[in-house]
Amino acid sequence: MIEAVIFDWAGTTVDYGSLAPVIAFKKAFKNAGIEISDEEIRKDMGMAKWDHIGKILELADVKQQWQAKYSSLPSEDDRKKIYSNFQQSLIHYLKESTELKSGVLKTFNYLKEYGINVATTTGYTAEMMNVVENKAAENGYTPDLVVTSEDVNNQGRPSPAMIQFIMDKFHIDDPSKVIKVGDTLVDIKEGQNAGVKTVGIVEGSSLMGLSQIEFDELDTEQQVEKRNKVKREFESANADFIIDNIYDLVQIIEYLNESMGKKW
Image (cartoon, rainbow, N blue to C red; front, side, top):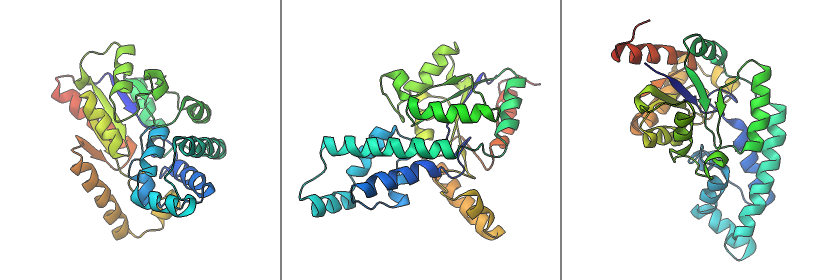
């Protein structure tokens, strides 16, 4: 049977649309005089933020802007300065807004009722997670284990290190008994690298990139179109399962448990 579910945070269980890091990235780069788009940011969303900033600095358009403004390419010191600005912006924003997505508590309570361990991995640092974790706890969401790349020698996603760390803590040897749930392609890759089952979540995901209000304002046809676009991206990444809402995970767990010969 399924023994553990590992969730991502922003875009999966909190922060519908994964808006906080996008805002912080834009502000940090704007402070350096560089304009970046949502699409450029979301391309590698889910990575450790230091690595993510490195990816953005490698973009051709960013290099061109940097060269035009500073007559040189960004240095390691430049990367450190942007990272520092990003951290300050993100932590400020997280303190203001870290709301649970719809269905999170219901799903969490189901998992605990059936004795399934709940853990998390993230691209956030421990300092960032301290803010998010405390806010989530105030609303009743308290995973058994919260892991960052700092717990595994800074081996961020898509490395399987954080999932392997969790499996070791939970004394789970068989990766088929573990599910990784996330809203980015990096989440799916992380799960695949660890050999666990992977589930992509559609609504409120970073891949969709819409706030709750923006999604709700779409007509039914537009919502279906947005969902299908995200589903195609998860399919292209070979996610094992794709769900619209987090509570749909219950059906996946029951299906997997039945296929493993365990019925409740």
